[in-house]
Image: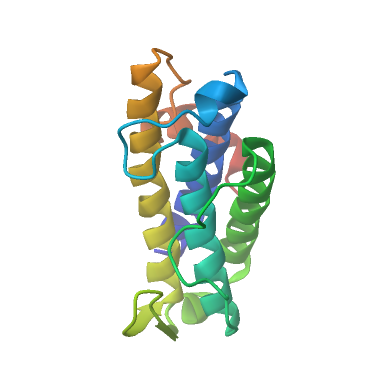
Length: 169
């Protein structure tokens, strides 16, 4: 599972980058336009992905994160979210690359933002983040469809064909 976890964190970073690069081609007004979606805008949806990655980074590092909700009330400008999420994704790629099997299987105890105790292995956290980002990129895809605008493909199959062969060690 170590290789799979590494591959999946690379996929998350690649897919987020592909989608954000596509979104960046849009006028800012489209990125921040309110829509019928869970987080209301494309920018706020990416901000949610960032917030969750930041929360779990704090859990993995054994420190407080300071969030009281799973998203901020307002989103920073998309360019800032894009830069910060790209950097956060690289943090997770690096983490997955350097953790041993034993470290990946260690349980991290934390408090959920909404209350209640949580416990997941480092590997489970990493795979949760990959799945979480994929889920919310789906919301972004739906909002793009409403424009209408088509983003570049960011499916796992495309990643495995186009990007992973050059990234494998």
